[in-house]
Image (cartoon, rainbow, N blue to C red; front, side, top):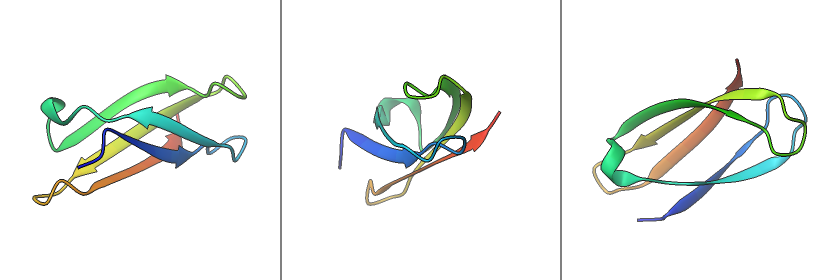
Length: 60
């Protein structure tokens, strides 16, 4: 289990680190502005049975 993970901003290409809240469920989605370029990203988080985390972003 990890308490943070990273994604690549779909607009500027920067790696962004986000906290992971396992209590929010195994499939999560929310919108967050990139702290570098300020463009909104839809953040997708999936947590499998072994609590391995996969994070990716898409432009809003």
